[in-house]
Structures are given as C-alpha cells and as structure tokens.
Image (cartoon, rainbow, N blue to C red; front, side):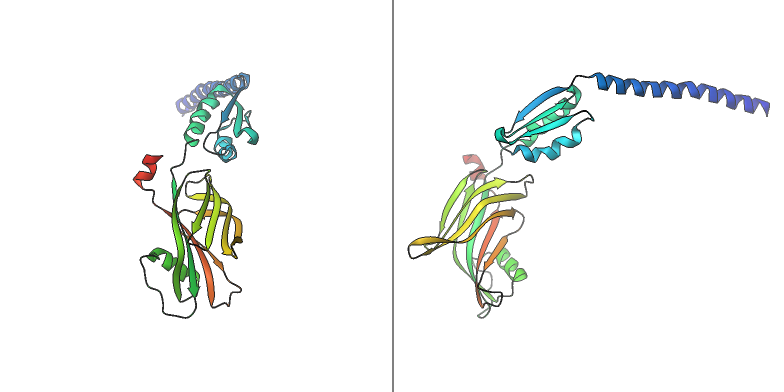
Length: 242
C-alpha cells in the first residue's frame, strides 16, 4: 500500500510542472500576439459591393482587429495582425469575382376566372403555368407579351414587351448567387401614346423560382394582369460573348 501511495504522489509531482509549463506557454503566446503590430489593408471591390463582404470579414478578425466600410470608394479597410490579414486577403479576392450574365424571361399574362382551363402551351411554359395555378384561383391564362433578356450585373435595361408594355430596371446581384436585385423596376403600359407606370419598386428576385406579381382592381376581379419574371439557364454563347 505504501508503494502505491508513493507512486501516486510521484505522479502528481511530475504532472504539476507540465501543467504550469503549458499555462506559461499559453500566456506567452497571448503576450506575443498582443505585441504584434496592427497593419491596415484596403481592398477596393471591382465586381461586388463592399458592404456585402462585411459578413465574410468579421468572423475572421482577431480581438484587436477592426474593419471600416468606405461606401464612396466601394472599399473595406481591415486592420489586424499580419497573420490574420494573410487569411482575409485570399477570401476577399475570391469573393470579388464577376457574375456570369443572367438570363431573364419577362412575361405579361392575362388571367381569367372563367373560360377553358389552360394546358401547357408553347408560349406559356408548363412550369410557369403550374406556379400560377398554385398561387392563384384563376382558371385560364393567356400570354399577352414577353421577352428574354441576357444582362450583366450593373446593366440598365429598357425593354419593350409587345406594342403596349415596357419594363426598365437595373440589375444588381445580391450576396447570394441565388438572388438578384432589380433596382427601380418599372412596368409601364402605353396609354394615349405615353407609357404610364403600373408597378415601380425594387424587386428581390429568387433565381430558383418564378416571381409573380398581379394587377387587378380587387381580389374579386374576374380578370387580372400578371407579370412573371423567371431566371433561365445561361447559354454557352452568353458566357463566351462576355
């Protein structure tokens, strides 16, 4: 029994110096980190908004680090140690990439509560028709006008839809590649020779499913006008031309 007790005591005495040594090493690392010089790194974004990258940078900062947004120059100024900046720089470079062209199909559709139910038609894709039936209680849908657009981030668009309608907006991608912002989107109808706005708003477009906006005097109206915007797969030619 004495030998067992002595062996245990010896083990405790041996472990204690190791624990003290580890704690000292940790304190030394903290002190070394606090002595590191803070460096300022400015990144001017060419393709993305600087504000969009804040969520990427903040989790990577040390306790001494800071980030400053400069919206006028579309830039971020990051202040931290050299070791932290070595992790942040490649993340910002990878994030600031140009978007591929975006293909949108914009359609004006007439919806009616009475009439023969609509089946899939060449000018009215089955996916769009199914989406309309899921959202609305109209029985028939017919295409009035439509167009397909291939546009790039930041591009201003003015597009006539047939003789009576026009859309104009500016494309802005959001942080996620699955969403895009159509800034200042306006749908206008020609009335007495002039285009009169029917819709004027900033639209957040989900690229995974069609967006449907309805225009009617009331929810009980038998006839309504539908604006449908959907993203289409990018064609190889669109990327090549870019």
